[in-house]
Image (cartoon, rainbow, N blue to C red):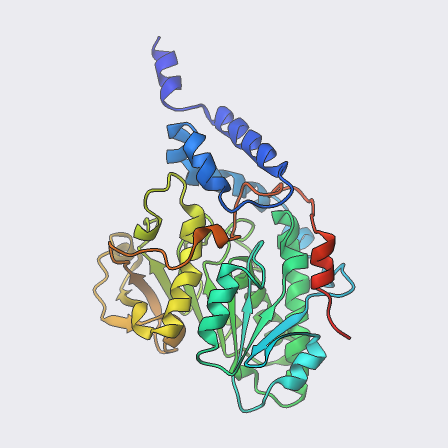
Length: 383
C-alpha cells in the first residue's frame, strides 16, 4: 500500500520522460507553432508535472549536450543559396539587402546597431517590432538579420545553423572593415539563439580580422545545447558584453557570461508579469527583450543593484549602488546585477504575438525542418 501512495504523489522518472515524449509528439503534429501551446498544456497537465515542468525541460535539453559539438557546429556555409538577408530599417522604410549592399549604406561616422532574433522569431513578430521601434528612437538606421530560413525549424537543426549565420554576419563586417569602418562602433543585440550568433561572430572577427566588436547585448542566451562548450557566447567576444538573464537555468543560461550580467528577479525567480500561469517559461524568456526595449525608451526603467557575490544574488540581498542597465548601461558597469520587478507590473506586450523558445513546437529536438513556400519567397535577397 505504501508503494502505491508514493507513486501517486510523484510519477517515476521513466513515467515523466514517457509523458514528456508523448506531449512532444502530439505537439509536433501541428503544422506550425502555436504561441499558446504551453498555456493550454498547463491547464490539462497533472499538478505534479506542471509544478516540476522546469525540471523536465532541463532533463530534455540535456539530450542535446550528448551530441559532439564538432558535429553540431561543423557546417559554416548556408544550405540555402539565398542565405540570410540583412533588413535595414530607416525613416524611408525597410529594405532587404545583401551583405555587400548593406555595407555600402553604413555611414562611417555612425554606430551600427544590429538585432539577431531567436528561435522561431521573425522580422514582424512582437520582439523584433518592439526592439526595432525602440532602437529607432536612438539611431537613424537599425539592421536586423532575417533568420527565418535558419531558425524556423526543429531546434537542433536551428542550433546547427548558428555557424553559417555567424559567417554571414562576419562577411558583412569584413566588408565594413575593408572600407575603413571601425568595428568598435558595432553593437549586436541577440535574443536566445541569436545571442550565440552574436558571440560566435565576435569570435570570428577576433580570429580573422584581429579586431574586436564594440558591444554585444545578449538577451537571455539559450541554454539547451549551450550549457557548456566553446561555441556559446562569452565576455571575450566584444569589448563590452552585457547579458540579461530572465529564464535562468531553464531556457536561458544561469552562470555569468559577460562583463555585466543582469538577473531579472534573481536566480530562478518568478516574474510578477508572468504570475498566474502554471507554465511560465515562454513569458519568462520574453522578459529579457521586453525590458531591454523599455530601457531604450527610458533608461530608468532598468535599474539594478550590483551583487558582491553569487551568494548575495541567490539570496537577493545585493548591497551595491543602483546602476543604469540595459541600453544605456555603461561599459564601466562590471559584475552581477539584480533587477527587481514591481509587484504591480503588467506585461507590456501581448503574449499571443510571441513566437519564442517553446519546447513543444515542431519536433523541437530531432533533426527535422519545416519551411513554407511563402517563407522562401519573402526571405529572398535582392540582387
